[in-house]
Image (tube, rainbow, N blue to C red; front, side, top):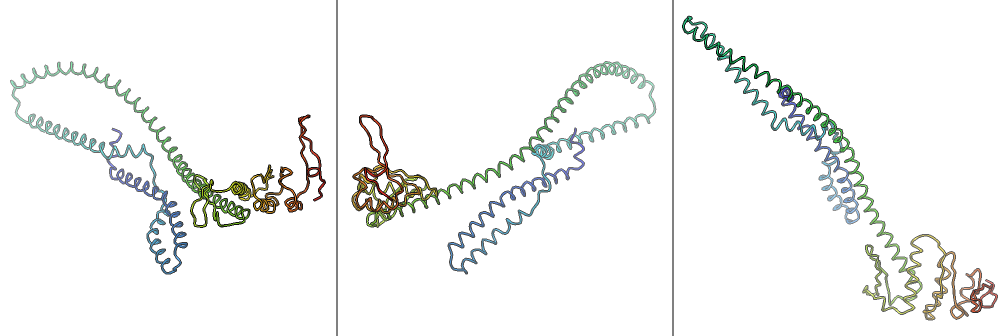
Length: 373
């Protein structure tokens, strides 16, 4: 049995198993050290933000530090002895069953040796007695019978031994294949340990990135709702109807709140307020993105009353973007509206559609008037 020599160092085998299990426990603790430290940092930050009383805060921090100090010791422990899963399985098999089987076989062999020694002792005692000729003749005849029987048994034994040799050869071939497979399994186990570590770190990284994504989205949504609210208040010019515009960070649904922080339905807004609200959303998106993109506005004041038109022309159009194109009819921007907007306009064009030609022509000026900015 290949495990017989190991019984001479049974205690070393058991110590090796205990040492490997301890090292695995140390490795598992080391994997948790980073998570525990991150938790401690988060707790410290929350406590510093939540308690203004320095004395109370120091006491809480001291208690937390006492609980977390023992985890710092785990990070200083080093891996000393790591065995593959296959090796641990083989040694555990030796410890749990093979050692006992080997001991049992050895006890049987010792008992057999004692029996043989007793037989030899009896034969020696018999040989030391006086020889009886008649008994010798009977014993000789019986011996001849035993010799004949022995010859037949030897022939039978040779055939059995031949079968045993063939069987042992097959067993050896199977054992070689098993050893090769165990070697390959050991290599695979080693590779799986490395891959497992990579996957563990990758999983932690993905978790952190997901948290960062959620937090960044909340910050972006908060910034967006502030910009939309600011733009709406700037254009609306009154604060009794809507006091704040909120955005759900998960669903991105927009909620309008009045001065008492009650929700307003969008159907409660007038047509002009709805258009101002839509313009505020677009303007807030542009401000939050940080990019100056061209803005094209078609028939901008079709549904606006006079108050909203003044705010729209004087506050929004000059500030909407670095480049704004307004497609207006001759009944929208005229008179005082045109006067308020003229300092900010670079060029005027008139688009005229010819029904007969079915085409549009572009001419300089504003509906037939040459206007200098």
